[in-house]
Amino acid sequence: MRNQSKNFDGETLDLTNIVNQVKFLALDNSPKEKIVVILGATATGKSSLAVKLAEIFNTEIISADSMSVYKNFDVGTAKPSEIERAKVPHHLIDILEPDEKFSVAEFIRQATPIITALNCAGKIPIIAGGTGLYIQALIEGYKFNEVGTKSNESFFASTGELKYNALVFGLTMPREILYQRINERTEKMFAAGLVDEVKKLLSQGVNPNSQAMLGIGYREVVEYLQGELTLDESISKVKQMTRNFAKRQLTWYRRMKYIQWLKVE
Image 1 (cartoon, rainbow, N blue to C red):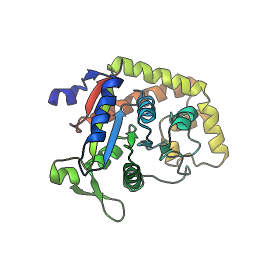
Image 2: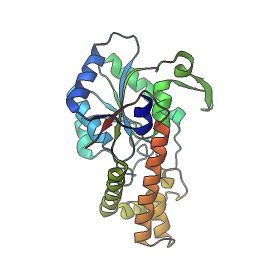
Image 3: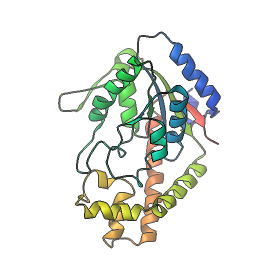
């Protein structure tokens, strides 16, 4: 298991096997609330798998992505498509204005009652996203004080168990393939109108220094629009920053030894 966690090696992703594991989870009589988690580096296909599972089990998805909470930040955040969101209810997407701030404590505050409500309805919610802190804080039961600062206590630290009865799947692939996918997705974002999206946001009065605008893709386009970068330099910088972000994600996941890694082919 130690090797698997360190090197992100695992079995080839098999949807039938995942479905069977979720079925067994549904039958478990543990008093804990149940969740399925799908995490991984950016561009590994988390949203697609989450939608497939949600359709199979007639359930709903809770986004664990620190950028998808912002309204009108669509192209650069790679939010689930309108088609995907029409198929399956998604939570914690498009809930904030660009100048509002979001934190791990706020994520926990909003996600927790949704999980409870879905469990009470006989559904297993699917948590999907790449913000490792949000997911780890949720399933390990981090505790926060009144101002939202994390304490040194957690359910996991005190009991050695996860707060939820959880299946935690991590999507992985060879680094060279991941980087290729990141580069291709960046090109598609620009082709899909990322520059126009940022222009529109700025014209609507969004502060270029707001938390939302500091996300990868947006800040580099702002630099282009302000004449600090050429368009090609902006695209290259987004690719590099996204690859660096993927490295940081994987570094974070190394501490989460309970992840079941699945190779995407």
